[in-house]
Length: 253
Length: 334
Image (cartoon, rainbow over all chains, first blue to last red; front, top):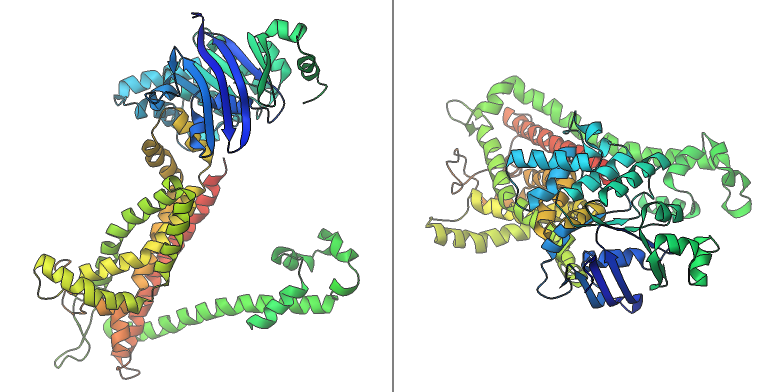
């Protein structure tokens, strides 16, 4: 087994009731790499992302077949501890969704639910996470401010800090900049490049340039299938499949 | 008044109420109205008349409320002139036809009302919020479809039926459990009032919990929080204003309830020592005594004054509930 990949997906099929949203998806996601998932709306990118932290479990009608292994453990095995899984695989959402609590409480929430009680320890985690998310300098003077009063871009970085505070290995990002302006987007992209030093990142994006700018590998989804996957550079310059080229060059999507 | 109103709404089919009120002074805002021809078009005079008609309906409701308030207040002043406002509120003795001296103190009744209400909330609040959380977060859709109508049915039980239930079921039960001569006491009233305010608390709290954006829930679960942690640390706090409003409305319901407490609490006049004491609430006093009191006496006016105090209390509670509900509306937006 390849040592460089943390996530291995084999023959993953996912159904919403009778509708098959993912068809026979196979994928290897490299350690400390940024993997971009691209494809037109409704092609299963976000659904796929949500299988990696089992957030699809929330939907009653979902049925999943196949294998998703993270660090060699099948996460759909009965013995899998979902809480531990989600601690290891964090997620940043499309719309910034900080809790209606203070900045401090937002970041401390994760460690708290995992049993960290000591104030000193929490303070240290909060500072470290906010620094890692490049937000510390902007908010350090008043951590007791409501998170909802931050700008959209700051809120999204807060959400990233909130994920980092739990100490994940993998960070899933579901179109993390689609609700942000270009400047805030750039900050998040810079941040993604820094974060990949420590974390494995899987990012869903609608923005081809973004995929090209931040990712090492890219997977192209169409109608629930992965049509093509490979190094981003190659994919964007010499795609194998005509449909990939059409999508990347903006002929559809 | 209702039937012609409905008929008029029929004529106005497409216009929303807001538009209707604005259209007259600002016709330019509604170009499609100006363009309308033939059947649906109403001439200016008729429209004005209809606008006045609805305004009058609205004014009528306000007039009734103000009228009640004025009647209570003016009668109350008559009582307070004789008794004194402070001693009316603080005197523990209520003895309107005392041989030596009459007493018109409602302190005991205020305590009785508050005790029964507090007791009711003590179990209706946790039970109500837990049920709301179950409905909003745990129940599957078919469970919800069974439980919700049942809760609505609970709201439809007439208070006199609940009171009857208190006399024949809870009273002997409490008497046996706690070894009392009879079970007509504050506890009995509390249980029944709790049951009565449960539907209010459950439905308002459930609305508030359901209105919490699902993004919060997802964020929390994605961080590895359990469902229980998510519910108790994110969803309920996020719905805090709405849940508080639910409790307030439940309190309001209990404060004003009359028939059930008359039947279940024993109505003794003495100052209650604990929840096993018989109590007489403010509402019960008015209902029991107003039918037999000679008009224009201090006793008569004092009953109105009790009504005024009660009205002030429920008004305050409703006002708070309203404030909290408005705040809940603001939180919803993410």
